[in-house]
Image (cartoon, rainbow, N blue to C red; front, side):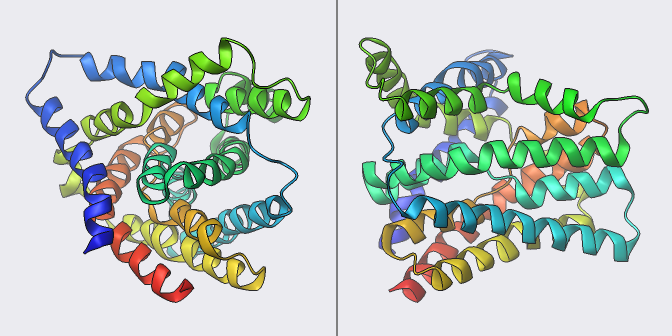
Length: 308
């Protein structure tokens, strides 16, 4: 009950955001504008603020990367295997893949801060710094290979997607300045820290506002397979890797968060842009977000019991 009450405010903000959108408050189109503000300004400021002060001399960094990237790879193999056995078309397969390996970084960081405080948020930012570039490169390559147009250059498309992604650019800038010993940067570090404090509550409202309640009717077997990858295969590998690599305590708990949150809302845009099944992607995002109200507290409670 203590865990549930700690997480509950995060999800109440998601629900509140959904109601605000339904009531069209404060006005039509407002939350789409907030999405842009968060994506292009607030969340990059948060990631820069955290990655610019991460201690990269920590020996846990390599093991953390192996755990999270390994979980991504195993989940991808699971999704591809299921899609092959069931004869799923390529566009739907890539949407299943996104639903399986993508994670909602906004909710992950909000939960990390809510449950584990500032130190937990630092670990979550470290995990995001590992997974965001890895997931994006992998997905762009997969989408182009599976249903890209002839004559498209994969290196060109990948570099274009990475360079236009503000989350990746902010992580790269924060890590680079950190490794060069240039942080904290006068004024800039203070500004990004102030912006980061406004990020998480506003992000949760915006994510809630993006939920499509009417899409539930069109759910099919592909949703359940991809959700199994997201909520079962990914966290199971994380727990197994943490046990094998002797990652324990706070680091293991935060790593697990990446496997129990729903897929990212940005998956819809990528599916639409690169030829995926955007309609199914919208369904996956909506239903996983709703399911996470139950799966997240249950998974964390079980994991904390297992991890001691």
